[in-house]
Image 1 (tube, rainbow, N blue to C red):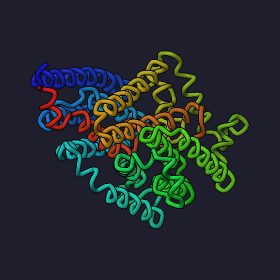
Image 2 (cartoon, rainbow, N blue to C red):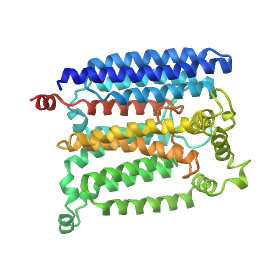
Image 3 (spheres, one colour):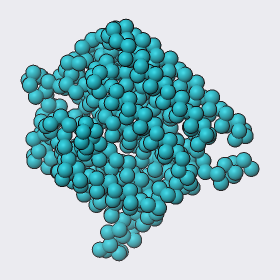
Image 4 (cartoon, rainbow, N blue to C red):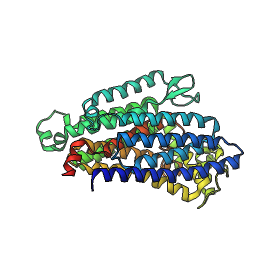
Length: 430
């Protein structure tokens, strides 16, 4: 099949998927407008439609041979989340719409960069130090927009950014580049034993552990710490094939959780509420209990768009938006959300296996995919009380500008990875 044919098929498939997603969101917007007697949902749909058309046409020029599923699914989830936020917290909907436009621009900006990605690999220490610098600034000068709780944000005049979101992306880039360059050293455990006290193979492990300690101790951000460590262990296993490293890392993570449970009241509270929320259903466990009631009341088909009482769940437009989806759309809606996220992860892992001769591209695609999967599992599991709450957001759907921006930046990198470099195109054409 010629590359012109491949390009045409990718364009057509993405366009058709966007049309289907647009029809779904249009019906949801009309229904929500009728149910709430408010036409702003249709206006927000218009904003989403403009962003989808602009993004699709621009990507056709920048990355004509991209994966057609990635952008279409990300736009479907972001549009669904935008309409849900309009239903749950209308005051935040327009902020999310502005962040969506900025996120699309950031994704397209990444797509304009050289596709060989040497610029990304060469400056790995710059990305890492930049993320760490912002994290340090947030530790010293961070604020919390709600006025209470962990100070994880930087900003002023109503605009806030969470540096840990940028750190997640920067660390994936750093680890993929580092492990691709030192892959043989990391695998050579016998050589390591003979070269004591050299710790080079364990450098990334110690670095990652130190970052997790900083995030957990100073900011009490259990979700970010867990995500960073899971991504690190996964990449280390992919790069080395050594299960010993993973077991050692999991033991360290377990020790960190035990220490955090004993040292920090917020961690202790989340674990106790997870184990048995019902005795304090009207007090400390009110949020998770209301979330479980919302999920249960949704049943199989849900209460309907604009129906039910998901607003009884505190912070439902952010951390607990999955509970609102469950109440309004039922089991069918939640499975659809999980399926869309799963497809994104699977497509990312497919990209990791697509170019085995490029270790950096393989590790980067795998790291981005695992990060997306871990974040999704942490928040969905927390909302359903499968695991303790960790305070992360549901990718693309929850309210949160910095999260949306970083997730679309992740999508931009996956789109670049899905478009083969020119020399690989020429080899395949022969």
